[in-house]
Image (cartoon, rainbow, N blue to C red; front, side, top):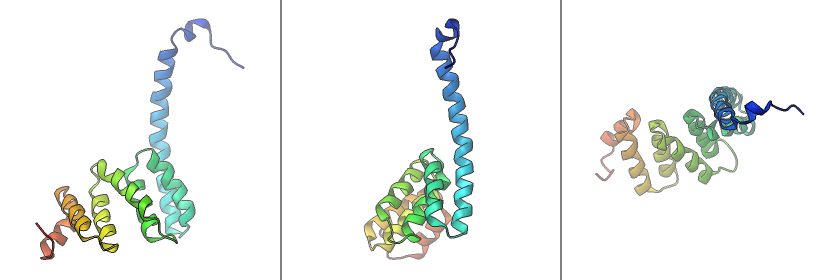
Length: 144
């Protein structure tokens, strides 16, 4: 086992800060790599493997991975996992990622939950999502 010289041990907090900074930088890079691998696997219809890579990236805050993970869990796996899909959509929305709000609206519409559909549709539109804005303008049944 390697040991650091005593003078380095005295600055354990310094080493922790350096390690955290490097770890954070590595997490961002590895999250992007995992996301890209998830995209490739999803395109190859290897959904269960794509889920693993998307989850890795999503847990590190990658909003595209959170969105795609929600999509797979909602639409491509059998049986669908709607509660998990909602979790990932909402995490992406919390980061102001408007496509996730739009997909969450569509999720609720798919499950016949009109009030929640309208709520998330309005939120997506307020976030600037063009699909949501268009849907609001074209749907006279949506309550203001």
